[in-house]
Length: 473
Image 1 (cartoon, rainbow, N blue to C red):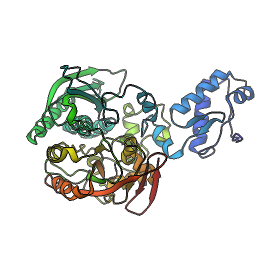
Image 2 (image 1 turned 45 degrees about the vertical axis):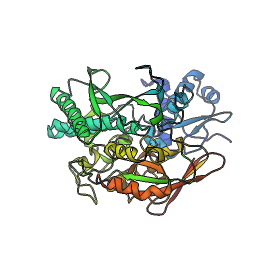
Image 3 (image 1 turned 135 degrees about the vertical axis):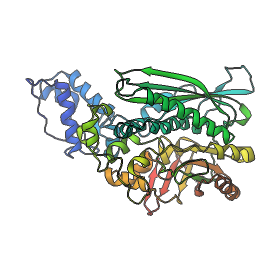
Image 4 (image 1 turned 180 degrees about the horizontal axis):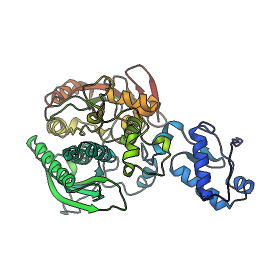
């Protein structure tokens, strides 16, 4: 395939390094459509020769663009322009499916239960051969920056209590997927810039964590605080980052290995509404895709007024390029934009505990639709055709994100949960019973699809509420 010709001008007298000139001009050519998905760039050697540059300079620029997700390296074909839908997300320094991470992690020791949702190890903590250890780390991601914006605009630090919940749930609900229902110990880490994030914010984060853990214990979930760390890292972050880790010991016999097979029903648990243990309506946003949602939804005023909330290396056209302010009403919703984006991530722990108490042996798998969203299922089972043909109606927030960003619907289902954030894989005859259990907690549930046999690897066929069909492999 011949390389694509495009305009490239190098100014050796400019104060901008040649490497950065290459990065900026190629990035601009992709943003403006001069270079499109699949176009092949000239070889490193030919570009270096044409512009009298060192090959290492060109190679460094290409690697930086590859890191941003704008280029992809192909054997014998050199560098190609990557998929344009994913460019918008990855150009902000994030990955929807963490492919580069899984490329490394998947080749490591898979633990005592390969195929499980989280890594399960031998019981190194107590030495019981019949037990296993699980440890998990995650956080609230860039959702904490939206809380920071809200705090700066309103002066109300209590918004960070929801951020504490987000951080805990992203650990707890992953552990649910391997059947952890016993005692869980949580530790929190708060990394802040003390100049911008004062003590009252830290206090709200700690109080929010303790209040949420107490609420979960009231619902029968044995989860406790193991302390934490507050680090002042002003040279690393302009605002605040909130992370948590969770550890538990469980019986090997109780662990769920996600042995997903054909001829199973998929029951989805809604991410929206107000369940029995929530104080307010939930928009369904969870804690994934917030980098995209933050910039594509929120107005440029936030970038102007709070430059500490974004990376100056990101293309300016991708920074706070949305139409809304936090106090604006979200279309077709009772929530404001800020309330919707900051809606605390729902935990399904009370329901999952009841489910496993009643039918642990019947549950073939539990999948938390976090990183990878509706395509997360493809990481589990072998030669499975996942068919999702009865999804929940599209929540207003995700519709607004799609309209603001013009992200393809195919990519939206890869980045956002789009209405349900937890899936239970069970025999067909138990669907009604599982739905009734969820309803006891005020959680809407429905059969969203099924599994069948596939050849030559697993795939997902997803039909959205508007009858658009997407195929993922």
